Image (cartoon, rainbow, N blue to C red):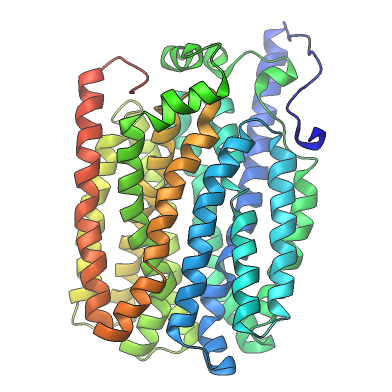
Length: 444
């Protein structure tokens, strides 16, 4: 497919150092803005269902398990798409791949808002999941290509906050649209926005620095660890890269396992949190969504602190910070479950704390996967661990809905508390390996 071809005309390398610096600075900020807005809108068209769910339950007479099925179909398809899309995106142009994915998911949101049957909902939401998988891998590819190891934690964390900005806006905006215009417009309006932003991405993104005549980012930043990473595995075929640096890399599998558990907690709190507040604490939909938005606000600060802290305190080693955050997840989830206080400030604080500690590993595990894989397989590596993550998300949908129906909210919190307590167990071997490796760049 020529439309997705990565082949580029030969570009004469830029020799002037001032021009190199100016070009790098311009495109790094330009690409960060494009990725931030683009992926934020992807997130908007992904989470519209969750915050229109209570209104759809009343209007269409659906059951919890119906939404659980939709969620499970979405997350399994999205996880598979994320891995496959990672392989494809590492060999394609990010602008086309990401832009088309956003346009298609916008169209599907429009059609979803015009539908009424569970069968049509399931079909459209599964298709939405497939195209949603086109968003993350191009961003991972660009973040790995344009930012070096010594600074990547900070810049990746800045980009990752687009989840939280969108996630904080979504409950309030979708709740407001649903209450004032009806739940259908909670899909139609985000769909229109996605189509417009997807068209803009075609013209606002570039590929690797070398396609603009720039030196690799490790050379430009004089980052020795990054230069070693760039030199790793030169000349291998892409199939060899996947086999050696991903499928046979035991640390990728450990990261994927911990990612699964992080996503069980993240999706459980995000998808079922407003329903928990309306049923257990008697909140109205708008108030419940406002409290849940604190989960994303906490995630905003947790992402930045996790990325910055792993650069600042651990010199680009992501494992120690992940371990600290995993302990915080367990304590925060237990606090939300066991608190006897029905107070909006206390409950908002619990959601804020869970978000703070969840979004650190949510960001850093994906980044660690890219950094312990091959430089040219960042999208594939993050897509592979993303597959694990969304298997965890699938477990937090239909299976968890059955637990809620049978065992109530006590069963719900029992499951996610155990998941939270287990995250660190999969990070410990990765931590020990990085400590032994010391100056080694790639663990495999």
